[in-house]
Length: 153
Image (tube, rainbow, N blue to C red; front, side, top):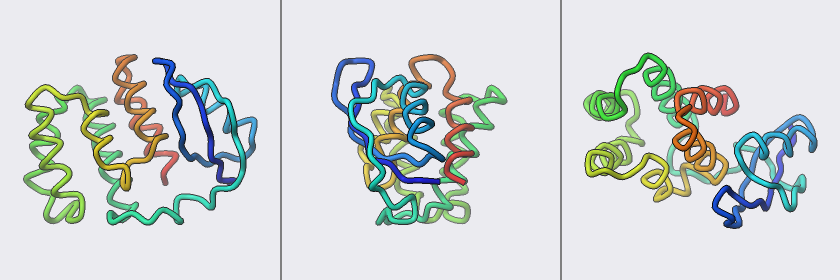
């Protein structure tokens, strides 16, 4: 996989910067299009997921994404998923626990998943957030989360 940085336009006409990895520049461009972005600039300068200096281990983000995706696919309401995750976070996601607690609280207050996750850019990058937003807008959040999980692994 090759790392890329990009500049694109999202569905609202806003410029979006981010990173992604793909086998080729053509596939990276296709991934951006699939996420609902119009690529403006794409270059292979990023070193990959391992270079992210996140306070949260990537394995926790991968497990979190996996659980959300598959439970949504099983038609479990998002609030119920996060409530259960919060109960078990101390053992399953110890570093994500405060974020899960905040997600649960803010979702119960009516905020969207993408807007709450955007408060944690060191954990959830622009590609992740763009995919979540696209999933919310299309009603395919479960499929997007499963695809994100597969790409993060």
